Length: 348
Image 1: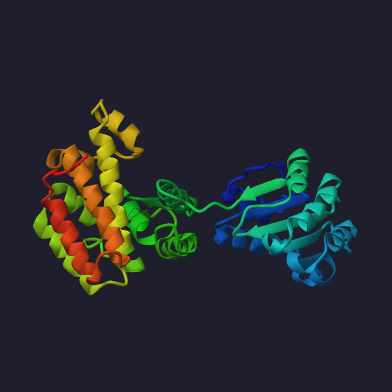
Image 2 (image 1 turned 180 degrees about the vertical axis):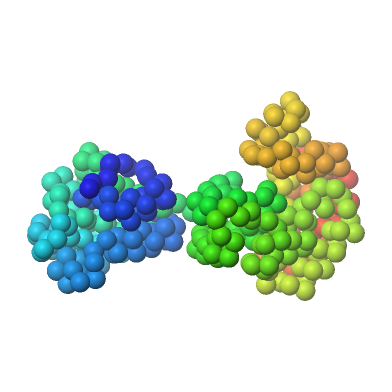
């Protein structure tokens, strides 16, 4: 059964279609996030039963093969099967003019062949190939790296797809710890799904037990302590970070602190300070997420926030060796001290 063609399916839908055997004659997989590409390739490979692979499964590596050879394989008919799979890997390493020759096949694709062209870690190339894909309804999937607010959406959707629910603090902990490493995100959430079972709630406690992230000493708790200007808690968490550098890299911590103060500055300059308006301006999904910003606006004014952001930028340069050779946790200690004692001394 053929799937309805689209030029921009999402990963989960496309993976489900492949596994269900709802296939289209031509797929172009491209984009910088290699994890999605690899998972889709695995799904395509499983479409052809093991016993049929000698006859109905061809793999080509684009830098080493001509377009004519690929097209010739695509024009063959499957043996004792409804379909054959032709997989073209490493297309990003091929010359654009060579890969572009496949456009002629895309325009008149053989319905019993599934052609998959993979540009792993790069944008698809070949102007005529892409034009033919669009005109003739080939499936084009761009594998994008999650950034910023897209990370919590990715984690939330994945958790729900596994039949789980997640608390806001648990989501924040996972976002802080897993970052944009998609492979790590999928592996850790799959682990939680196996341990917890259908319908379970992902809580900070179960994250601590099963993933190893402390529910009390993490970037989420640190930012909350900074928002409250709770010095004792801030430096207690920093002490834990020093003892556990593997789980608490300073660059990630600084990035999370920067994100908080960048959003706090947005909140401070939002005219309508009503909860609904602030949540919309900050892109928040739950009421509880707003608490740290309302607290931050009580404890820091806009001038202090601007001074803090400048200090974070200086810290970022220092840990990269620009203007300082101090230990990174000593630098983080100094940054936290400057944040908690910011006076709003800025110069324009």
